[in-house]
Figure (cartoon, rainbow, N blue to C red):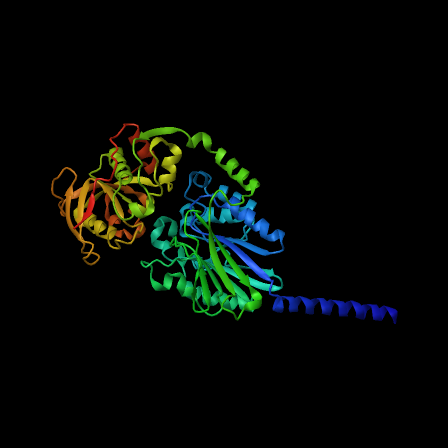
Length: 497
């Protein structure tokens, strides 16, 4: 009898404990989850010491914390590029990330390498809408408990990856519709008992994207929070679409996103509060993560510190500049491509130029940061009509600062931004001041990304007599060795009337 009473008391204690836990989740206003997020850092590690310390400080006072990256992290700076992404994975493991959404720039390594990196991660690498030959290739979702509440997280990457990535790397890949994917994932996660659902969405809100491919498409019943990326948008306090909150933390590790969720106020307007924190030296930093970054950078320092040239002026390679006009840096890069192989004309997309170079000595590290994609230079014979069509493509979305904006050498081009896309080019002349002939065949140097039809430049695939050369960074370094004349500003190779 005493034994039976003891069993009953144990069962009663368990029931009371469960009841108290449920009561705490439902009624205690102090049950919260803090999400720390970052997006579109493109290989930069600057924010991680602050992210790590922020998480540690919050956890030390009993807060629930999750850390997410929403893509375009593993490539873009020399440390990440030379290690093909593994250095960033190593850093993120040290910080303790809870998940990462895949960005379009992760595909620069190809699917096989992405799967290798996923194996190295102590956290899930998520993309629910990517198929390889009809089958899911990456982990679609993950779940976790926060004070008794089951939280579901899934990843979605922009279908624009098909045109913004090297087409040769896209063989067999298919990107399903983001909203349809979200509907499917909500159903699946709800069936698994999730009461709060987060989308890690590398979609963005860019006006040049189709509405169905923007993050707003995920504002459907069941998706509580969209942590967004791709468009490099700084949403300081987030924004609400229907019942879904959408947040994004800008670009290049300049800001850290913070979302505070109070589960006990699920029917309140204050259920989710979002803000961003500017990354600055005055923030508390985790010394162990600072040391880890130093270790990773020092491992490649002997290579990147080599001086390969000198510039008396700041070489302008900022995103909004190289995607809307020619600059002294874009002129120098495209000139180096023609120097490398003697072509009549050279092309590189503005999106392939990723950083400026400061005045003074130019190191290999500067060059590889500016041109991080390891593009090969190729020459083809191309008719003037195809070249004209490519120039039209380059200004088709102007003044939006998009990566398809074409930079070139060998030409001077005038266009009308008020005309309709496809009918904007007004005049083209050669750099030696002779007339451009649409019926003539020219030797054109370009990066292999464009030759493969990247950024929608399918007209360039018509080139014949293909010849491969070395890399774009290699050509630039060789050109710098000739001590070319470097100008303070761009020459105005492309202008509008």
